[in-house]
Amino acid sequence: MCEFNLNDPKHVYFIGIGGISMSGLAELLLSKGFTVSGSDMKCSELTTRLEEKGATIYYDQSVSHIGEDIQIVVYTAAVRAGNADLDYATANGIPTLSRAELLGLVMKTYECPIAISGTHGKTTTTSMVSEILLKAGTDPTLSIGGMLPSIGGNFRIGGGKHFVTEACEYTNSFLHFYPLIGIILNIDADHLDFFKDLNDIRNSFREFAKLIPEEGLLIINGDIPNLHKFILDLKCRIITVGHDESSDYYAKDVVLDENAHATYTVMKHGEGEGRRCSLGVPGMHNVYNSLAAIALSDYLGIDDNIVISALKEFGGSKRRFEYKGDRLTADKTGHFHIYDDYAHHPTEIKATIQTALKVPHNELWVIFQPHTYTRTKALMTDFAEALAPADHVILTDIYAARETDDLGISSATLVKHVRSHGTECHHISDFGAIEKFVSQNCTNDDMLITMGAGDVVKIGDALIKDT
Image (cartoon, rainbow, N blue to C red; front, top):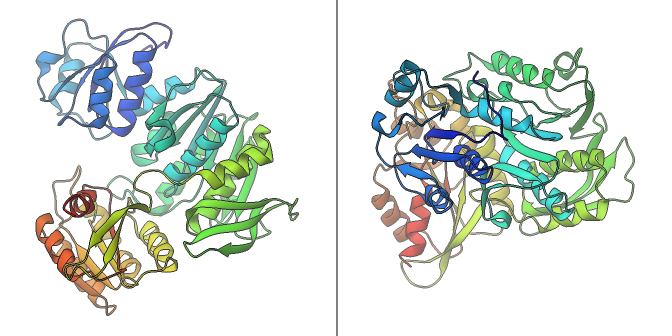
């Protein structure tokens, strides 16, 4: 790994600078006096923001952009050997860092680095923790995997001792981090284009937990199977969060309002302590995300009133069961309601649909964009079961992302599995055709959710814009 010092500004070039995490790191370096340039496939809100702050960005790939003054090249996990820019840097002796390596080196410069991991819920929990720290006046530095309205983006540069970041397991990225405090929300089978199986994923999360020093803290889901084996011989302090009294923190007397927002009593070591918490985001899954945030806040000594207030005021981050707007029905007698969600794994889809079913509506429409052939093939049955409770399911083409091999499957394959549960399901490739289909068939008070990690969000945006 090349030498890096946040107090020694250099010229850094980012391959894929428009990524959600890459852009945040680039912005941080700009604030520290670094010269920043980079390339990306297209202009976006994030790249425009960087350009306004002084970055030079190219929207084509050419090694000519990597001049003699470039001192470090940073690349994303999606960039591998064979990439022209990365190969050029390596051949010419320019030091390189992966995004995760750079993020880890940045973490080392803070007194209290906090890394929030888990197969699901990272962005929401990181956002909850961020809102609490902001309300407590700690002036944290934040790196979030989604857009948080209260900070106007995904990254915030603070002057305090706390550095809060999501910690992604894909390609073992989080093993380059230096957390003093780590959170593991859950461990599920995912990213099977990289990991061999669930045991391989568990091993990766255990290696992450082992990064936490003896004076540090691990907050972990107490319901993880065989947890005693997972935490065996860890040197740090451990706090568990779960569904019942077997965990250090759990929720009691949970009540959901008409919009599926939970209110519950916070139980700590079997005692309620009089804390009643109401959430501003819907769904039972967010009860457990919030418990992790509360356990962390207790450890940091943050006042209860601040914590409870911040969780109640937090309305969610972008693309997490986000209400987008209404669309007039074809007969002009009412409106249907459009939401968007980032869910792209069966566990996430199930949680989102269960939440949606608790919110008053007529019929539930889900437009799902499967993400990667590997995930879709490996979890085909689970996807079908997760989608089945919806009244109507529309599948787009599979979003290939980094993959080139279709593994002999398509969304048409998934259609058959969904229909086997008795659920109406269609495969429509063209986004425009999907927009036309739902605008003609959705009726008054129907709920429509666009769902997936690709660009399916464009469908809902178009439906609202065309109103």
